Length: 218
Ligand SMILES: O=C[C@H](O)[C@H](O)[C@H](O)COP(=O)(O)O
Image (cartoon, rainbow, N blue to C red; front, side, top):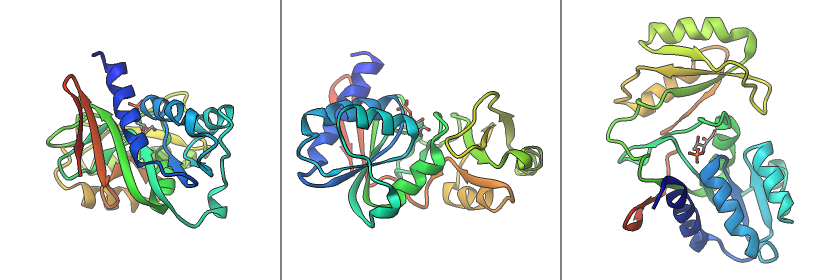
């Protein structure tokens, strides 16, 4: 089984949590794309989706799935999304595809976060994957200097503009031993919109696909 097959297997395993007549919170990225594809046969059975990016919205709509404005929906049961790293506490690093802020918002409204990953994503301590931070463009250099003071090594993701019109700093060389505290600290820097640590609100269920099938961590 290659990495793509594993991503597809994890995504398809998440379909068991989709209920008829429900609204589904949908993340962003290559693993989530497999989940959206797997929703196709259910397009007439679900009420619709709320989406965390323009890319996912387009993919959902192409399947005939209605995409609701989040301001018109007060709650839904599940949010399904991938991750760049996930630790044993089900905290995650996300934002490799620059969708972190909308993902965090759509995840916040859901009752349960179902994280779909292949077996390259679980780690004991997060931080090998550079931590994405979404920043208001005019604050980029200031925020970078503040991150250096915290011991990180921020790198501007050249040429990337988020769906919110902001930029991304990828923070290298951070051993993330206290994800909840670091998530808070980074969000306190003026000019930071949000960071890619999903620790205060981690996953509820992690589906990890490996060569022997899909393992559920709940
Ligand atoms: O901004 C992107 C998201 O956080 C993705 O969910 C994350 O980067 C994982 O992406 P993929 O499923 O492509 O590995």
